[in-house]
Length: 376
Image (cartoon, rainbow, N blue to C red; front, side, top):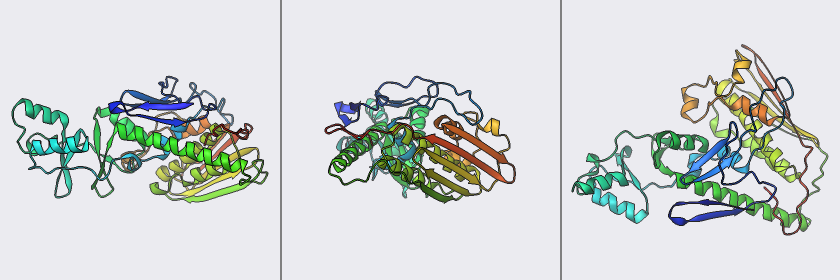
């Protein structure tokens, strides 16, 4: 299957993907709780669930389908997609100068810096308005937009897409933790980043296939259990996702069905993020056995006051910092339950929370045939 996305100026990117992954298309995700990533005139569609989940207790019901793009927008950050270094102007630069910058670099907006700090942004619309009124030689500070909405470089791409939809802008300045301008992000940047990652995974799949047939890989039917553990520290956002990626590498090497890999990865990631945001620290463990993946997250408090309320989509107690960083949307526990074959959570105030999730590995991906790509 060839997955393609149309970009500006007729540029078309493509990645070769396996027929076993039909959910990765450019059509819109319309199911309940779908995630539809709209990028310019295209939509990278990924269905997050097949319908509302009413199940309670240990059994989570029919597992949802999770696409490659769904995992990518969890893993990738704004810093992975942004254009850097940014093309900038000064407040006293003329709009004619800014216009030449746009033409030379084929961009439609230029951040304006003063003493290294962004103070405004000039868009192509500002240039056109100035031209219409005969003021193209005016300094940029007279026409620039002063109320800047910026993204942080550690925001997830999910958060970035939400900001594009919320504001309707064509670009965002990107700031680091010190408030310094480090890049600019456009919808096209997100499109290109996603496609590059898909192409990279397709290339890795081809390399893996070649290794399989050259006898360079170990037996996929491994019987040993593997335990992966990590201590999770409160507020340690930079370390989030590492155990999830490590787990996926092991499952991939064992030939586990790609959809199962993704569901397990989301569970581990969301469980870790919950501890980072809401707890004072804890431990995350993953046990990979021949038949299942067991993921347990045990924190040291403060505990969840109302577990039933916490399981509702969109309900969150995340503080301002977590929200500023692009987290705390209230989808962590609901996503964990939807991705689990079995799910259990217990919490006691002032003691802590124990989360237990199981993902069955009954669907094993068959070894690839010669000439066929193996989803990675």
